[in-house]
Image (cartoon, rainbow, N blue to C red; front, side, top):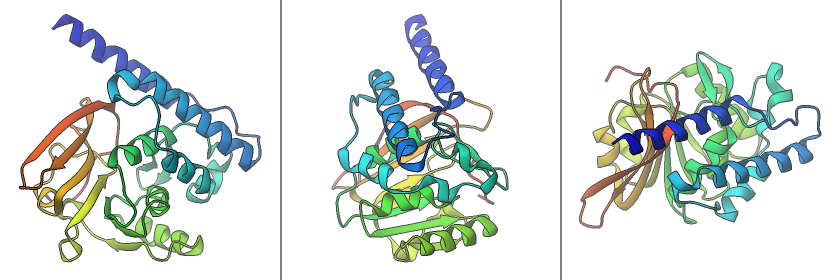
Length: 247
């Protein structure tokens, strides 16, 4: 037990360090900054490989991270930090996740071309844009109306008009568009929402942070088998804003 606790504390310390340190590219041009961001992601992937089981991320995921202009999804006052490996505030108590976490969660989804993907928590729209580089069937829900409207506008302006967005409580998913091959939740819930499990296709996969706001959260992969059985596994400790709503 002591060994497991020690291991958990080491992983938490690594994650906290990664969240607090930038990639040091604030003054570089966008292309160089994105290249540095990718290098930092690859470094962090190697650093956490014992916990995640991943030494490398799928090239398509890294290509998506290299393509989407993150600086277009952060407030103007934060643009110089856009490609640093840390979360940034986007208003309304919300954040855009650090690039490493975006890349890891996307990789864990294992998206295939043509998959229908649901995102819970549009936020700035950045994660939705990353998903849209991997499949054209993307649905995204945001509970905070000003954020959702701003993200939808930004996505349209950047050519991602095919992404379906709506304002609503993501806990209940998007029933009329279900089922989904992949579901990604970008805010922490204290349990895996049953409606999302119901809306997950057989052989589908969900990536979700689970845990209370003031507790250690765990990034989890939830899979539904062909016959509807559900199994889950923990990946590593994370820190997300809480999933909000009336549930």
